[in-house]
Structure formats: C-alpha cells, structure tokens
Length: 422
Image 1 (tube, rainbow, N blue to C red):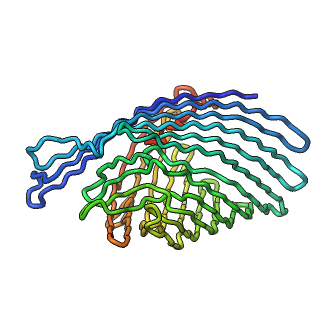
Image 2: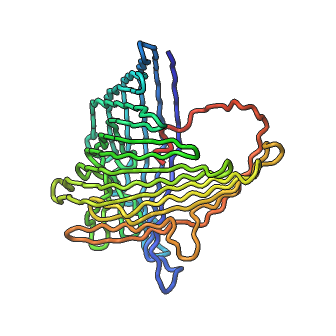
Image 3: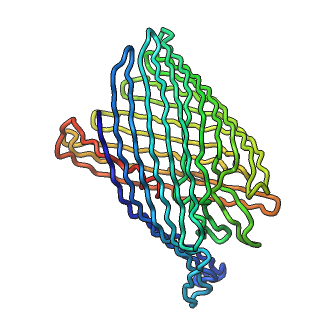
C-alpha cells in the first residue's frame, strides 16, 4: 500500500493593457483599458494505492481526493484621453470563487498471456464544482458522476512486429479562467470571457495500431476515432457595433477520425532522427447561445513533428525541433496554420559538472510566419479576422553546475494545479 499527498499554493496574478493610439500622434492615447486579475489558488491532493499479484497479472486499486479553490478579484478600469483618470467599470468587475472537489475510485488488472499483454479497468468519479460571485447571483453548481472504462491489448506477431487494440474514456476539464463570465479587454475589438455553466469534455477513444522495430530504428502506424461530448470552443457574439464578445463555451458534440504515423532512425550512433505526422477529419455539430445559432462544420487537418539529435562529441551535442499544425476548423470559422522551429547546442566541461546550453526559440528568417496565427470567425451579423503575431528569435543561454554527480536524482512533485491555471 502507498500513501501520498500534495498541497499547492500559487499566487496567480497579471494584467492586460490595451491602448488605442492616435495614428498621427502616438503620444495621444484615445482610449486606455487596464484589466487587473488577482487569483490565488489553494489545492490539495490525497492518494491511496494498493497492488496485489493475482494469477497471470497484477491487480491495482486506489482512491484519490482532489480539492481546489480559487478566490479571485478582477478589475476592469478604463479612461478616455491622456489626462483622464482611470474609472472602474462595475459591470465588468467582480470577485469570484471557484471550488472543485473530486472523489475518484479506480481499479485495473494487467498481465501477460502467451504473446499478448493486456490491461483493463475503470475509474469512477464524483465531481462537484461551484461558481460564486459578489454580484448577488445564485451559485452555479455542477455535480457529475461518471465511469471511465479502459482496455488495451498488445499482441506480438513475431519479426519485431506488434499490434495494439485500445479503448479509453477520458475527461477534459475547463480551467477556472474559462468559467469567469466577467470580460477582459483582450484588444480594442474584443471582450473575452468564460461561461460559468460550461461542462467538461468527455472523450471516447478507439485505437488500432502496428509497430515495427528494425536494426536502425522503429516505425509505428495508428488509426483512431474519437467521440467528443460537450466540445469546448471559443465563439463570438456581437457586443456592439465595433466590439465582439469572445466566449469559451460548449459548442455541441464532435466526431474525429484519423491516422498517425512516425519513424525513428539512427543511421549512426551519433545521429538520431524522428519524423511523425497526423491526419484527421473533425465534424462539430450542435448549437450556440440557447439554440439560436446552429453549428455544423467539418474539415480536414494535419500536423507534423520532427526532431534531430546530433551527438557531435562526448561533450558537444545539437538538437533541432519543428512542430507544424495546419489550419483547423472551429465552430464559427478557422484558425490558420501555426508552426514553431527551434534549435539548441549544449557543451559540457569539467567532466560534465559544468554545462552551457544555447537555445534559439521561435526561429524566424526573413519573412517566415513563425509563432503567428490568424483566427477568423463569422456569423449572421459579423465577420472578424485577427492575425496574432508573437515574439520570434528568442535566444536563451543556460549555465548549470552539478555539485553532486550521484546517478540518483531526487524526484520532487511538480505543479499539478497551478501550471494549468496560469
């Protein structure tokens, strides 16, 4: 039996500044909006795990309790002109509280029979979520009980060829920011807000795959299907003549099916290459804004990932990465392609005690559209397209010195709650 616990406290705060400037005089501010958010998090996780060998396999059982609370303060301030003072907009300002409590019971039996490895089990969850604000509105409560079964079989077909069959049901919960209905001025044309009644996505995944090992590498190929209930999309509605409301909400149900493949090659001991790709079709069907807007969209998408590692010498190595995502269909439009290349060089000194790593992130040469994405949405009474251009050509130099070269490394728990909410 194993017992474990984790307590986490995170101070989450930030601001968004949005200024409309006079194009003929950039010192002249026509309108200035400032959003301040202070959203500290307190969270607790407790786990009890038990394992017992039975027959040809091992039975695992456990219980987990998760408690997460955020009490946030969100201020919306605005002013008109350089000389005007900031004025708090009470309609968009609020104190909110989000409480999540989850009780989970789970069990799994895994083993090997002849040339087949298998596992089967389920997880039961009782989840409670409460959203409250200081506006006098009644609390919004979501309470769910769900069963998440899973089953996997891996069959050895000989000649280093294996076949995999798998099914699982998963849940994707929204972050607390996606629950906050009080808007943030993302830019002059957009108010961004959440939906306190949003439901988690439930995803059923079916997979069939083959993998092959050979002398200087390996190859895999999978086909899969996903059934998504309550898919979450970022959708728009009209706030006024020049501003749209951008809302995170459930857009209906989705069906996704596709295929992915990847190859790993090691032409020499010093060189290793990975190249993988994914092609899938997504169909979203549902309704928005109390069934006022019908959703029925479909599209093909693909992604590519590559990684090249070169061990130049015992103390010098280099790496190159490229990730690419094609244009994607959404409930109300399309998100354009998005890609990120990066490389790094690492040099070790003093018997590997000292190391220096130089990273080049978001590599962009000439007019490459790196870390850049155009988001287009449209409806009966609006059309908007915005090209988001973010930082490129970021150089980082990291120096590390190891005082103790012991092969045993401490395994400290990482953030389970806070990183997701940032």
